[in-house]
Image 1 (tube, rainbow, N blue to C red):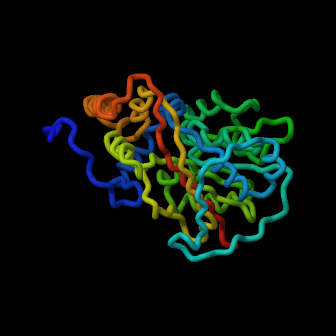
Image 2 (cartoon, helix red, strand yellow; image 1 turned 60 degrees about the horizontal axis):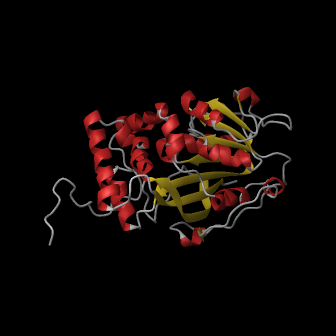
Image 3 (cartoon, helix red, strand yellow; image 1 turned 180 degrees about the vertical axis):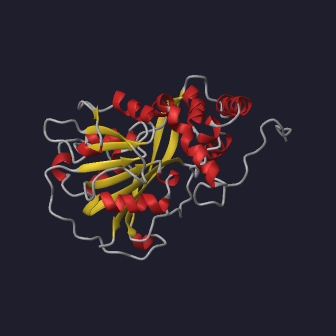
Length: 328
């Protein structure tokens, strides 16, 4: 039996928590603000959102059938979970209002626009909202083929045929500055757990048109796979969610559908290590702690797992999508 590796002890058991914990409100705010200067790394290293998940969002929104039909999508293994399969009362899906000629989206905590760009590429009119102007600049720099621009709340009623499909707005999920009942879809990708739940829920309800949808999305490392679990713990990935996770929302919002999609993001091994640089724990760590985490990942990927430097490794992810509507 080999001697224990004291410099790289075994990973602890799977957490019993169903969602991230932040200790104190002050620590929550510190970690939430850590991403402000990380736009380039975040956009380069964090995965986008798979086509089946985008399809599921579009299926839940009025007036997108014509736009969606112009774009091809790739199938993938997804699991559709009805509310009855979740720890929630079973609800019938409400009747949607008549289709609109345009569909406007407010993407809260948009960051570098991973989801914003995917929705704009499908023909939706997207307002990417984030408190960090530098993150939004990254969204514009890497925007879709349709020319993007920056706007303000006064111009947020949705672009016309000669206006861009992706615009940005510096603001927060709790106070977007958008008019009442001005959007068909509100999204939050990889961000809802950073918001004030009560205030963000109230703001989403306020800006949604009748019959509109709130879509909450998370990409998380698929820790059901052994090596990924240890990988996530070494890098201190705090956004790993349990299977029974349900996002907290204020009264009046209810989950009408949940989709779980498992997939892989192929990356060269240096990017498996650099991915840690986009994690709030590593961003806010001391230089010594940061270098230790990166060194441990280097050892784990190249020595323990045996991947050749620069080889391509598929990182297994699980994408969780929750579709919600406001009670009438």
